[in-house]
Length: 459
Ligand code: HEM
Image (tube, rainbow, N blue to C red):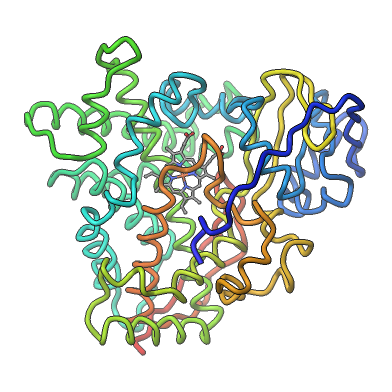
C-alpha cells in the first residue's frame, strides 16, 4: 500500500439553501471556552470532537473556531478553493521563517512557486537522490556501536536534514552545513511551538538562556541559507536541483524572483522537510523496539529482497511490508497532527454554514485513529495496508501528506527515504529501550517521543 492508493473523491462542499449552524462542542468553560482543554491535552481533545458532530464550533477565548471531524469533510476542506492557508498559527510561522515561502503563500504566487519546486519531487527525479539516501541510511547505522545507547532524537534529525539538504540543495559543502542545519532546526522547532501556542510577545525577547538559544539558532538558520545561496551563485554551477530551480525561477511577468523570496523558499522547504521526517523516524524506531515481531518481519523481508547485500534505493519498491510498517507508523503517529485553514468567503461544509474569515482546524491524528474508520483502530497492524484490506479504508481517512493544492510535494521523496532508512536499520539491529528513555508523546509542531533512547543490538 502506498499513501496515494487512498484516492481522493469529489469535494463535499455544497451550497444547499438550508445551511445549519455547527453545534457547539461540549465541555467549554466560561471565558476560556475550550482553550484549556486544547492546551492541556490536545490529542485527546481533538479525538473526542467527532462525538459532538461532523463540524463543531469551539470557543477559544473570545474567538470561534470550527473543527472538522470526519474524513470526508477534511478531504472536502482541503480540496475546496473556499479555504486558504492563513490564521494565527501561520502568521507566527511567517514572523519566524519568512513571508514569501511556498508553505504560507496563497493564490497565484503559491501556484507559481509550486510549479517551480514540483519537478524536484517528481517520481522520475527520485533515482538521482538514491545514492545520497543510501549513503545516509548506512552512515546512520554505521555510527551506532552494538550495545551502545542511541539518542534517537538527534540521530533522526541529523539523517533527515542531511538527506533533504544534500538531495535538494546539492553540493559538497552541504556535508558540514547539514550538521549545523540539523542543530539549528531542532532548536528552532522546539522554541517555535511554544511561541505559537503561548504568544507571550515581548517576554520572548528577555535574555533568558532558552530565548538566547532560540534566537541564536534562528539567526544561524537564516545565515546558513544566505551562505548556501551565495556559494552556489559564486560557484557558477547549475546542477539539476531544487536550488537551481529557485535561482532561475521567474515571476508572472517573466522577471527573476527577488532575493527575499529565494531565501524564504529555501527556508520553507528545509523546515517542513526536516522535523516531519525526523519525527517519523523516531516513531519508527520506537515501534521497532516496542514490536520485536514486526522488527523481525522487516528484517526477514529485507534479507529476502536484497539477498543479504546492503539495502539500496533499487530495493525499495519490493519492500512492501517495510513500506506498510512505515504507513502504519504514520497512521498512528502522524508527524503533522493538526492543520488549519481560513474561509475566504461565506461557504458551506457538510451542510453547515461557515462564515468568511472563519478559522478551521482538523487533526490527522484524530482522523487516522478513529474507530469508525479502522477496525482495532489502536492496534499497530501494518497488514491493514495490504491491497485487499486497504480498499476498506474510507477516503481521506489516511492522508498524512494532505490532499489538494497544499498537498505535501514531498510524499514520494519522504516515503522512499523512510522505507530505505527503516530497512537499513532493521537489517542490522534490533532495539530495546534503556533506563531514562521516555517514549511518551511530545506534542509540538509535530508529534514525537519525548526522549527516545534505545540500545542497538545486532541480530
Ligand atoms: C506541506 C506532511 C515531509 C515539504 C505538507 C502538508 C502536510 C505535510 C500534511 C500540508 C499542510 C497543509 O495542508 O496545510 C509531511 C509529512 C512528511 C513531510 C508527514 C514526512 C513524513 C516533507 C519534506 C519536505 C516537505 C521531506 C521537503 C523536503 C513541504 C512543503 C509543504 C508541505 C514545502 C508546503 C506545500 C504547500 O503549501 O504548497 N507536508 N511532509 N515535506 N511539505 Fe511536507
